[in-house]
Amino acid sequence: MSESVKNYKKEAISIARDFHYSTSILARLNNATTEGEICRLMIEGRHTKRYY
Image 1 (cartoon, rainbow, N blue to C red):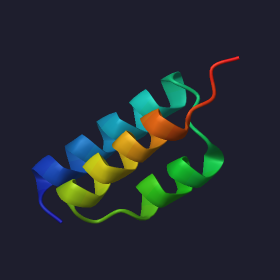
Image 2: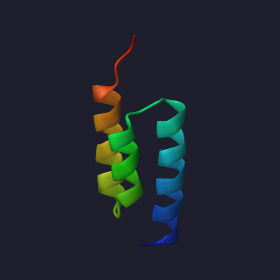
Image 3: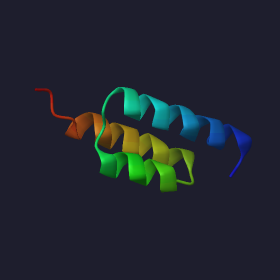
Image 4: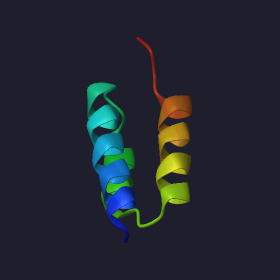
């Protein structure tokens, strides 16, 4: 995994925690290895977040 993907992953995890994404999304982000996978998980987290 390149350094830029590592930085992107670290930032995505931080943002996901700030926005209170589910623990399953956070766990899957921790295991993600590509930029595309991280991006897809962030989109999935945004669409599955409950606002109440």
